[in-house]
Length: 281
Image (cartoon, rainbow, N blue to C red; front, side, top):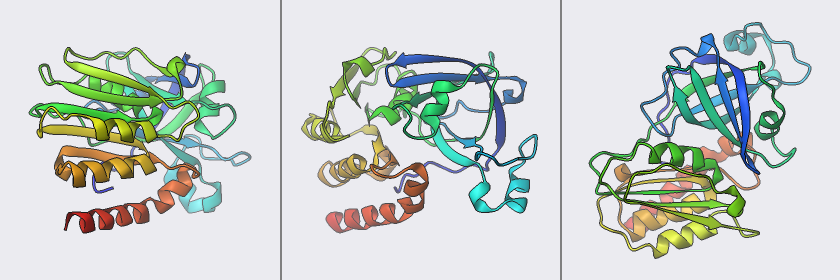
């Protein structure tokens, strides 16, 4: 959308799996480390992300991986597959990069990898990118998202400025998917359990019903593209919030894998912006 995360020049990194942990029934935490991660450089934003590179089965790649050489010598269909994930935390002293993965059995690519990967295995990735951190001068903060946005929301809560209240809405499958989140006083966290409902419906309803503490809000709204679109229209058109006070984008879209979503995202965003401009005119 208009607030697409800022792009940095891609930098290839190699991380070694140090340990894994299943923190809820459907969320797996993978901690990467190793000397090659020294100077990784995350920390400015709370929505930092990396693009993990998964090798294609049966394809031999340069060792160490050289993506320029891969692009020159191999056909596109043999390039590693990329999947984008938020950095849950980066500890430069311990040289540990933590990434949380939603896992739904054998479905997808990154989730099953996180479920089976063992300590000592390596993975390459580009990054970090990112653009959002809670504004120190906002009157209050609004954070909204589904499971895919939970790592960024958790990281943002840990960086909220003291004294600024926050309203947080996180939608997950059920109570077993809730996590312990650290947040300063004045933060109200509401967990919404969708059960068999459509992803994001409860989030849209909750934000539409919210009694805003004031107009001076800094909002972070991310997750499935359809509910993000609905909330963007609500916040921009109904609430009158300026774009510069919003970090809002679809991380994924129902019925599309990341390749399909990324290939159609630019057109999706263009349509959203046109509809919004028409509603505001």
